[in-house]
Figure 1 (tube, one colour):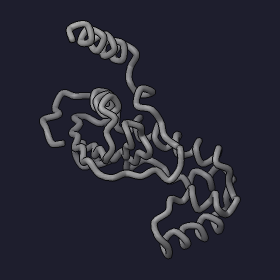
Figure 2 (tube, one colour; figure 1 turned 60 degrees about the horizontal axis):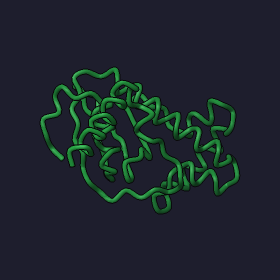
Figure 3 (cartoon, helix red, strand yellow; figure 1 turned 45 degrees about the vertical axis):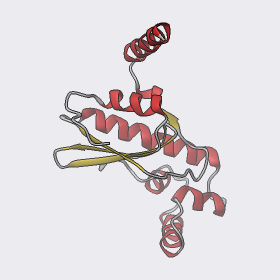
Figure 4 (spheres, helix red, strand yellow; figure 1 turned 120 degrees about the vertical axis):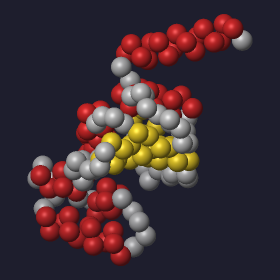
Length: 163
């Protein structure tokens, strides 16, 4: 989807993608900053900003993994078909699903926080086949201000009355 998105805030675009249950990639740009979201059926699977820390680095910082263990997993990732670091770590038994889920959700929240400080924002949504490796995701409504969410629900309810 290419359109003039000037004046739209990040939460406006997230709400639209969530309501429509879109699957694909949202590219967020501001000046030299570029970030991305991956969506499946309107749910956020991943989000990356240039300032977001990688999950492996976060796990090392928290003492869950050693540098050597992370390097081993990164080598495995480079030699086989693309598999997320979290999925490889689960196979090794080094971390639990709960830890990976927490790290992915933290990474998404950090990226959204980064994008929210960028101005002006430009958005490009590309429909593509995005497949989840697991059940980890965040709903878009977590990032929608309550007043905007309420206004949207009121609008939808009003439309239902017209139909």
